Length: 154
Image (cartoon, rainbow, N blue to C red):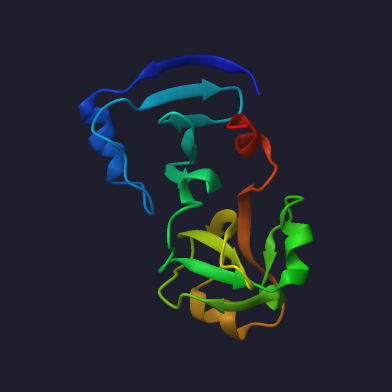
């Protein structure tokens, strides 16, 4: 991933992004925008979010110490090896999901045993459907353990 430019954001820009960013809080200052050939990434000492379309997606590192109580899906341990290779989340691998999830919401995917974030993506169906359906893609995987964004903070 090649960095094209980087600069600190104004308080106004930070405020606008805060309104679009779920799961994590941004400080009022000291937020840097790094534009790469693949993503726009927010840094606060390490990558905390990246832009996908018009949505800001929190990074797994930023979520690692958070308790995720909403907009989550829990997957069985057999699904993890596929998810950390970039596969989308399939409905049969989901053992639980927040029923408030709507299509196109940002969703944090947690492992069944430790409830730790494994990937972050966009819902392709509602949370209720994720729990009920036995086939099909449920979540588009955008960021996972070991990908380019994960490796930026090593």
